[in-house]
Amino acid sequence: MEHVFHSVSCLIIILTMLYILGSYFLVLRAVLQIPSSAGRQKAFSTCGSHLVVVSLFYGTIMVMYVSPTSESSVAMHKIVTLIHCVVTPVLNPFIYSLRNRDMKSALHQVLCVMRIIQTS
Image: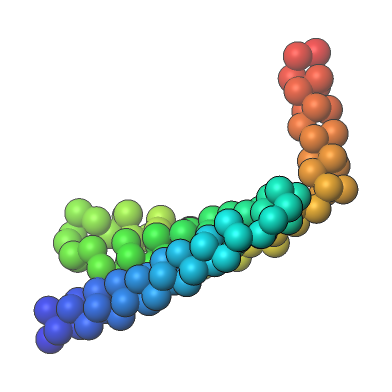
């Protein structure tokens, strides 16, 4: 039963990843046909943010469901589950908000202040 579950999980995850990669290929082809470089840059920015979030999501899912189970990997599975359930949803709005110029400048100011405090 464990082998069946493992095989079905692998199949579903890999098929959905291939579907997403195919979609990204079509988006990339469409973006490269945009005549203005500003338009291409904005489209790549949006796709890049989404690709980071999808990679975090599917990367942790693959480790949780596709990797074989063993007694030595219990701690690793706990960490991956924590990343999947907590870190990914917390980073999601942060990653998408970095596309905003105001957010980028505010983050830059905070990091500069932190660097000044550390050197003092």
